[in-house]
Length: 349
Image (cartoon, rainbow, N blue to C red; front, side, top):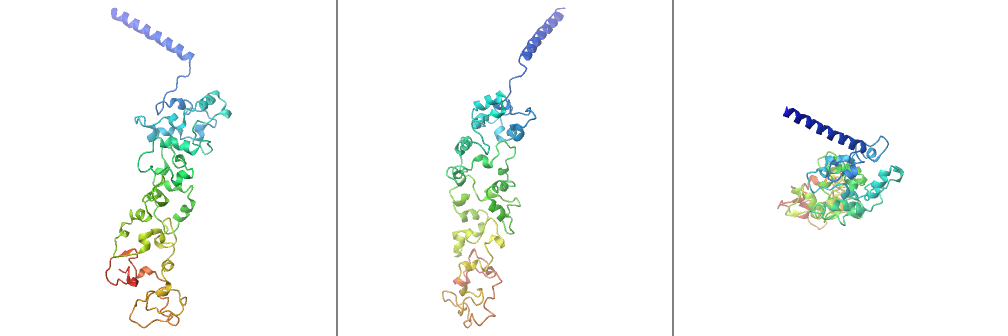
């Protein structure tokens, strides 16, 4: 009997509590917003959530707002992660105008990252570099070519997107081509690095956050950058080809060309840009007049035959015109062959 009385008393208490909660719910039908992803994000997600009306709203135009929960920035267990106001500011005026219901008077957040924002590039970058300012990859951002041209972090990175295209090797070039349109055209030429194939990308050679080298390269010099993949061209060699040790782009266009091996133009015309055509039978017939073709420009005898008359011996002059210099000079990047060390015989196999 006593047990029955206790059970009846417990039911009465529960009924009373239910009545109180019902009165509270009736008096305040809208429960306080709860954090969805980040600590303190209820200040923003109270409006920017899945329950927005069907009219065109910020969430409809930018459906990736809540996708930040799928990114590293949305990992609540990481205490380093910011919340909405760390990047966009407190935005009190934005909240007040939003709560008033007058969308035509809506004030943007204190820091907006849209294309038509009135915030300065420094203010927008400040939201990122507050955390992302350490490490060798971003130490040259200040003064870099991108920073000097008012390219901000969000010009390339999509913070709210579950997949940041610029961080994917396969999709990164399309982000870069938004500005670098000439490089897009060069990459589609017959001879190109395997960027369209997805085997490498722009950041394989360039550091978009700046570097100590030229052209924002990942190394201090052009040749050092190329040697990261083409180590066999590094040497040292007994006979070094000076353009190779100076700058690979003397002969190559790394973004793409119509000539083989990314050469700016096909041999022998590429080689004739530096080498005197009168010292070799590969010149265009008749262009040099009467020249002793058995000697090079320094007078070194090239063969034991009698001097060749460039004007009359049409069967010899220009015999390599349709061929490549590398048919004979195969090791054009440098040679270790101790034989035939004269200048004319260098870089042979």
